[in-house]
Amino acid sequence: KYELKTNETENNWADLVHLIDIINNTAAGSYQDSLNAFFDTQNYLYTWGAHILFANLDSYAGSGHNYYLYHDSTANKFRFITWDVNEAFGNFNMGMSIPALENLAVTYVPSPSANRPLHSRMLANGYQQPLYDAVCDMINMQWSIWAMEHKIDSLANLIRPYVYADPNKFFSNANFDDNIEMDINVPGTPGGDNIAGIKSFLTNRRNALAADLTAHACMVGLDAFNDVSTFEMVPNPANNNVTLTGFAQNSTLIITDVAGQYTMNAIISGNTFTLDIAALPPGIYCVNLKNTKFGLNSTKKLIKD
Image (cartoon, rainbow, N blue to C red; front, side):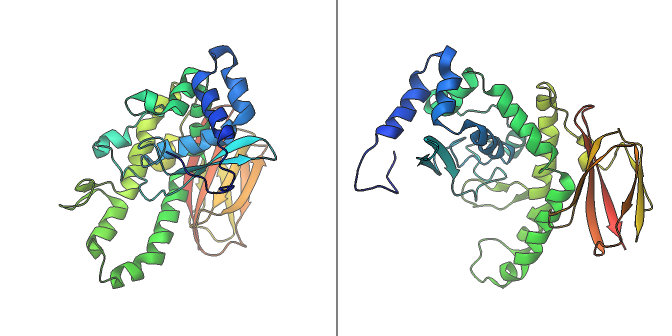
């Protein structure tokens, strides 16, 4: 099942055997302490959560492969390295429909669960809530609908001329453009004729996870993708100054550009704020206000003239 990529001549598997022994055989009372001591669980929870968010099932979360385990001798811990993520957005469907993939549970483990001992044992030994917390962090920050859509559009615009010019592509130019926004059906496609739309999947996935996450102490900013927000922003479009009102005190202000890059990140102490955008290049920006104390997360689109 495994092959050495470094230290091949030594042919010593003792450290991996020890990790597998911890995963499979540690008693419940000492499970977290034992696993945390020899495996980078803190970062792995975000890796696991990202595979679930994107329904990237051609991975340990689904098919059980496409990863490296690196034994960091400095920390004496194994670190998980994801590899080959081209089947994200539910493209590797494991026999599931697009709606089923969009509704994939945070704690999804394929059957039989014993074939994924790392996930099944972690979920049974106190890691369920930390996994929900990691997904909550990602869905309310990196999964801001405006930031994600701008990244998608930017990448699509970058590769579109090369897609159009490729004489050997498997899909039509119309398929390429349509699938950015919505599901398409292309008979004869390996793995299934129905292919999830990138933006539609993103929106539906976020909607579907809201109730699941709310039940585990995470308030998903649902208004982030329909632009019904708890704060006002005028004028918009604007050229110099924009006034923000109607939000909770001590909120975090985050502004990203169309490439998803941060242009501002600050804590606002009051409930009114004047934003100076004179130095920003003209374009579309995502303005996000988040207040974890009150479970608020709102996003609006700002147009700079």
